[in-house]
Length: 509
Picture 1 (cartoon, rainbow, N blue to C red):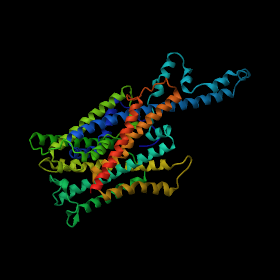
Picture 2 (picture 1 turned 90 degrees about the vertical axis):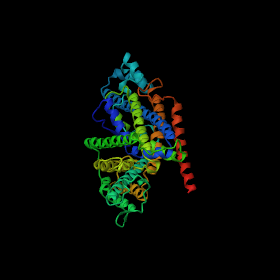
Picture 3 (picture 1 turned 180 degrees about the vertical axis):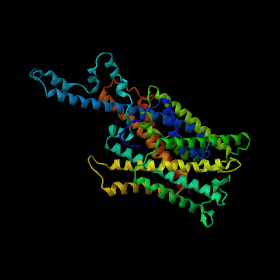
């Protein structure tokens, strides 16, 4: 997630990139969206999700602009290095006549940075380069957000960036660590005789109800959490990555699940069996809805790995806009079919669990597939995110030229990565709140604050290095400074609103 420059990888077409981005954004967060829609009201939810989708698109263009500026900076540094090497080579064989010419020295001391040096290639090519030709601002290298922060932020900004990333990853791991045991608990407790899995009122289950003999539901949840930790926790101590075929398999399972849920919800509504009567607006549900929507539109941290391999980037902003429109339509379809198919009180944190009833899904295989598919998809992601978080901890405390002792590197960092999210999952399995808080705080920073500051700092740096007349070919459509200020003010407002809402709810209790 946060890291340095990595290989771009195999190139793919813009439309393949569009599919990859769609798959990245539409993930586990979408499964918590129907309940958030139901608690906030359909009109408020529709307005908020459209606005947050627009804001997410805007900051996505900020990140792409910063990627282009970072690529240009790297090219400039390489040009500087090559020129220094050429100067050293030429100085080793200078003639007396060269030494007698003072003009060489004056030019080397007084020339501007890159905008004038580009005159080494005269004529029409010079004008194109000064305006930001493809070979200057083209995105060809994969520069991760951590490297961009290091290039454009000061030391305090870099540390705050890593702190925000780390908090977000902790929230991600806590959500995953709770989602798997919850799904297993719901499915297996129904098999053992507790009919909550498949009961339309199953969202109101009692944690103290029996699951297997004397074992309560909450005990079963914690047993599954312990097993989850023992099975997947050790991967935190090693290096793992998601293979191409595993990514294809998990994406295929996810889309089968989403399509099945939408189809069966539409069938039930078409038959007149829909029981949902969502309110128009309910302000008490906005806090969780905001966090869920921010979490569900999150892609900014992974943009470098998606955008850099795209072969033709001329219309990449339009393709990303198309992606956001498609995702917005998909989220609306999933959520609206849910809130009109099921009563508000019966919608569960993990929407897949609402399809356990034989009255809704008559095929047992599909019922258990929907109930258990988050277990597989989340289990494959958990070790990867854990390793990413561990590496971010290492980067945050790394000092130039220093190395960590074996105990710190192999034991301490993995332990501080694994323990906190497991403790949070042990204390609560309220997925809607976990997603809401993660999105509202750390997600707010990653999706709004960091991209806005990156765009602002990269623009200033680009003007300083390349000259004020240089135009970044991937400049965001929201190029006016007003939009950066608007995003920052919106991020601050969201932070204050969510905090005040939490305090108000706690004092009411």
